[in-house]
Amino acid sequence: MRVTLAIMLELAAAAACGAPAPLAPVPFDGATYWPPPGADWRTAQPQQVGLDQAALGALIRRIRNGSIPSVNSLVVVRQGYVVVEQYFNGSSRADVHTMQSVSKSITSLIVGIAVDQGKLEVGDSILRFFPQYTTLQNLDDRKRGVTVRDLLTMRSGIDFYEDPYPGSPLQILNDSPDDWVRMVLDRPMNDAPDGHWQYNSGGPIVLAGAVRAATATPFETFAHTNLFGPLGITTERWFRSPFDGLPHTGGGLNLRALDLVRIGYLLLRDGRWGDRQIISTGWLAAVTAPVTLRPRTFGSHQTDYGFLWWLLPLDGHGSTAERGNVVFTCAGARGQWLFVIPAFDLVVVVTGASDASFTAGPDVLYSTILPAIHQ
Image (cartoon, rainbow, N blue to C red):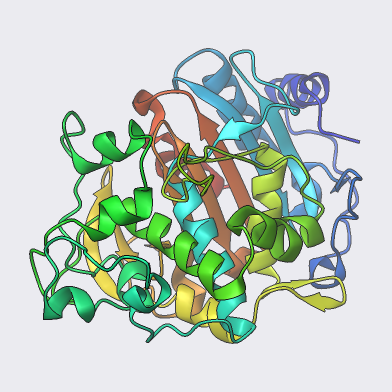
């Protein structure tokens, strides 16, 4: 049973008249709970899992009245209980929503599964997966030295930029009917591998091509068989290359909000889903270890970067190398967010409709959701 708007309005009304009637707490047994495939999550009221019900109700009202613009969904899961599932501005539970650059982080998980299976290694030269490119442009020793790891950390040295977007390599790729992988690998180098961090939406596309080559399987098939399917996700959709069908793993994934929650819950459970280890704990430790410190801020919030994952400090300022002080974060244009907070057994998903809502995710996390935790 989902947490409906009617229920939340009742809670808000109760809060307005005084403290809501106390409810019995539920067992904090999330470590042994996984939502079954094709079925709803279990639910609870926020106060039953140690969250401030009035604060969350006020947050929902702010979104609904437009004080926080362009938000499509908000889902909060604690200890395996859905305590908020709300949709706004005409969106619904059934909507398969653009993930934008959240796609990159999920691609990192898929690469990790291929690594776990022994299909490739992070130290592999990326060019070894593409022997068909015998006449790459701008080929030099720096480009020959680019590894899988360099693309995962956005430290490849390949000069692929996207800001400003008009006329950028990303716009040219997005509009092109040609070979996306080759377009990225043809770009000139502006540094040696691991020389400096530079945001690159082409790198994850090259990684998808490498996984396809290493596994001899279409990337989307490998992803569904090894990640989406085992989590009970069946509605994933990819924007794909007209040249060869390769998914746009830099920003072309579409999922339901509740599907993205399952991805976050997989990280929360250290890569395990029921009796199956989907992703090794070793890969998740590598993915979520800070490699580049403070490459960007989200609004006023500093962030570190791992293997295509952002790392926000739970306390707002400390080291994200400490597991207890990290929020594993996926971020996408137009306000797409996934926050995984192991310290509080919490997953939060926000989806949005415009860049006006981009910083709403971390702002809401720090200003309302984290302060709402009482135990």
